[in-house]
Amino acid sequence: MSVENLSVASSTAAKKGVIIIGAGLAGWHVIDAIRAKDTEIPITLITADSGDRYHKPMLTMAISQNKRASDLVRASGSEAANTAEVTLLANTQVTDIDPVSQTVQVRSTAQSDDALTTIGYEKMVIAMGAHPIFPKSLPQDLVWHVNHIERFSQLQEKLAAGSQHVAIVGAGMVGTEIAEDLLKAGHKVTLIDLNDAPLSQMLPAKATARIAKAIESQGIQFLGGYQVSAVARVNDDDNNNDSNDSNDSNDGKKLRVDYATLSSDADNTDTQPLEPLIVDHVIASTGLTVDKKLPAAAGVEFDRRTGIVVDAATLRTNAANIYAIGDCMSINGVACRYVAPLRAQAATIADDILGHEHSGYDHKPPMIRLKNKAISVMVTGVPQAAGNWQVKTESDDELIMNLLDDNEVVSATVTIKAPAVPKA
Image (cartoon, rainbow, N blue to C red; front, side, top):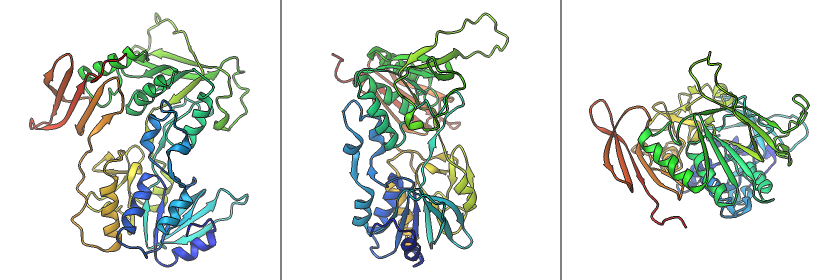
């Protein structure tokens, strides 16, 4: 039933069906959940890409495993749509949402004209995800991100030429995982972060110090407490770059990464400039944000940092007949950007859309695991670096710490262990 024809999609959606915006893990989970309980209700899936099904967390591990993008794709968008009997509008952008008339406007990016098509819906699920934050110091035409399989594929192709030097800006979960993956693939890696250790925005210093020591022991260069001020091509004229195509950003020329120590003393004139890094590639791992255009058009409550606000039990937005799921939504002010809860969230949305009685979604923070072999890091609850962290167990091989709330109740736990198998 997969189609590319917007007029067919318009007539299909006119049958009071469901529109899902976004074909990532969240969007496909909703389709799976609905189809498990109703094989007839019309579903239209709108996505700016091909809609291929793949497991995005694998992107931070795939380069060292020599897996190409095609190896990660479980089913093409058209194959998956046929199997689920949904109408797929691939390479299609949603330009507007009208919650009163319950319609969306879309345009095909595969066509040369800017013709718009209006499609009606009875229920809508926004699963559009989030996109990487690029500070001004990290120009998108020079810097990579690994948040989508297409960009991953392009970077992998560049790295296939042999051992190269890669700088990663941002040492959160993703940046730290990518650093190890690239090192294992034979590349030289420099990991740069504003904080003194990786995962410092999530965990206390005693815990992050162990993580920093572990990744440095592998041979990853960690520069903590530094801010990148600029990235430029080596020997490039400062204002002579007329390329707007980020796919051509790493064209074989070296990149210069300018960085400096963070200082609260603006009048410190004794600080010497640091020698720039000369690297082959720069990857941004500086967090995610949610585009406000569609949430604003739909009239849903929204925060650019955490995403679309939903009711915790039903995942409904404040706009009638509109739900949100995945990286683009938040519950009780906390962004929901982990894969584990998606299946339960999708099941709740499916029941609510279909009018089935259900007990409501019970949000529980998932266990967080750092996918690094250098050290085992597991976190439960809702961690935050600042807080009353107390040591429960501490030895050379293991550290367990609990975060206590104002009532002395454990709200998060971190467990850090040395690798089970010593490095060769």
